Image (cartoon, rainbow, N blue to C red; front, side):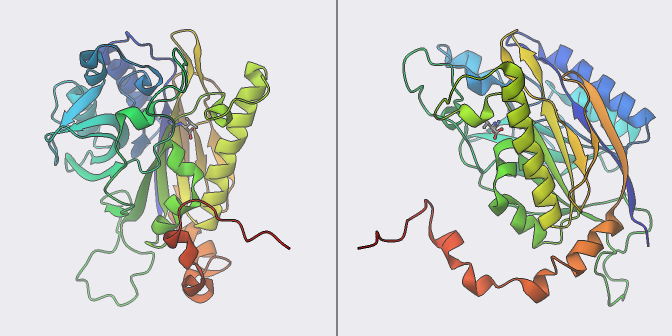
Length: 348
Ligand code: CDV
């Protein structure tokens, strides 16, 4: 039986340090409306979507740093927060689901790089994810260095990789307690969330693969020099840097979708923030065989849309990546036992 879902990535172009939440949210609502006009049931927005990508700055004023975060007391509170409510209200009004990333400040004062999945039909946040692989530095390596400071502003996500079912995307999805014995691949869509750097790590995807994920949603902010954040290499042109960063973005999305037999949607912030901080585009929808089926053509606000059939995931899940038949977890202990790599002893 086909399991058709209409999905969109809402890519957002340049957002500057002094851009107001209101102006960014009004752009996001325009993107939502465009996606809805194409028939989208689910719209994915980028990482830290409501503001510029603030972890690139070393703030001298703590109040400015805090101003980029949203207060979130859990449950539905982000959707009802006055700063960002108009976007969630629009999703409610249109009856569409949205996934959106933001800097989260909890009621106990913790800070996370977070994304929520909001179901427009029920009007509720049904899943929250906090970025696990937080890249960059706590302190700039030398005074005045303009570097990625995510480790300064965000704690490591503490919610794990928990897949969830999104109600209402697939008509006639099997529900619990129907007495049906074979429920495999018949229920509501199974979804997982990742944020930017997470997508480069196979360890982030496999837990979702092991929960039967059919769709992995990713928000990102990737600079053209993403490959150079820790140790700059030979200077290369902006175009070459972008191409290289796009290559690794595509590689991550395509391989991991293939290896976990799931579709993926990635939505990026892009363009030149403040006229000088370059972020790549490349927002995409990838099928469960690893093919890009739709991709952004600009580095500006743009909706990437596709109609996908989650039934296609069955092929990989039952064949080349039939985990139950072919995985050998008893041999994978090193993956969770060890953090950095340890080389074999030197030869005599
Ligand atoms: N926002 C990110 O996590 N960006 C990283 C860069 C800094 C390498 C990324 O993986 O794209």
